[in-house]
Image 1 (cartoon, rainbow over the protein chains, first blue to last red):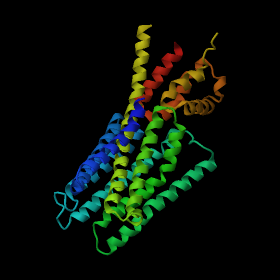
Image 2 (cartoon, rainbow over the protein chains, first blue to last red):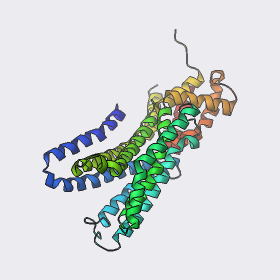
Image 3 (tube, rainbow over the protein chains, first blue to last red):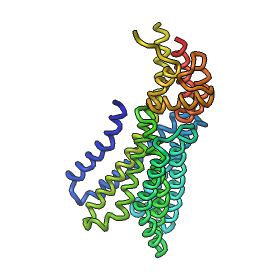
Image 4 (cartoon, chains in turn orange, brown):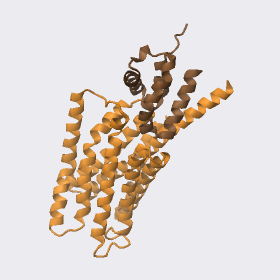
Length: 277
Length: 81
């Protein structure tokens, strides 16, 4: 039941966001988007950090969750410090490069962290769900979707950077790291299926949903303006995808924390039962 | 009259809340064969402890060292009861 409530959180948040967009005048939407972006990143950071801190130093998954948490923290800091028009140093000439470097570190860490979490089945020594043919098909599908959703963004941001737009560096680093992360959706989905019915299955399912959110976000950045002429409509979809990605990141971290805490609870219940007997 | 659980079923049931029923059975089968050289249905009560020892690295990876040890301690007690 508690895991089903966690699944509802991102959709509830999204509904609240859309309600706010409907109630608040269009002229104030940019301010709403600004608050939504920073709160979403903060929420994802809290979830991933909560998961990491549930583990002890040396535990395998602690590293994976710490790397996810550092990504959200650094992209949040990038906005606060270096983002043009809103960061403390946003108007400085060196801000785009500093922001690019920050996002590079953030995304590189996030990619490694996703690899870390995605290969848990190999480290733990269990088999992924499905036959080898099904697994290969899922991997091929994930790689294709990754390239389609974020590949064009790599091309456009690389072109923009080549033409002197230093701010495009942030998008370039993000898109390259996202392609790597999206390709890892395959082992994450297969791990979630293998662990279905258990508390850990929720963690992998929700983490995969977070990556799907980022995938949708990149796809909107790549193709949004091609399929819709209304810039505000595109922005709504883009921010909805970001909100889902971040809130699923939050609940995935909380699910991981709850799943691990469940072990202690079971042990405690065992002691209690023994004492009662 | 109810049939009592086999040692493999006790361990698989204990792990299923974390790993899910499918993976719990699969893990018991894999590690019973690897560590003890026997299929789960051939395990006896004395095999529970070595089976849980064999499962420990997997549980450590998924739950962390401290929590994995708690689960193993809990299952050992449950099997002994």
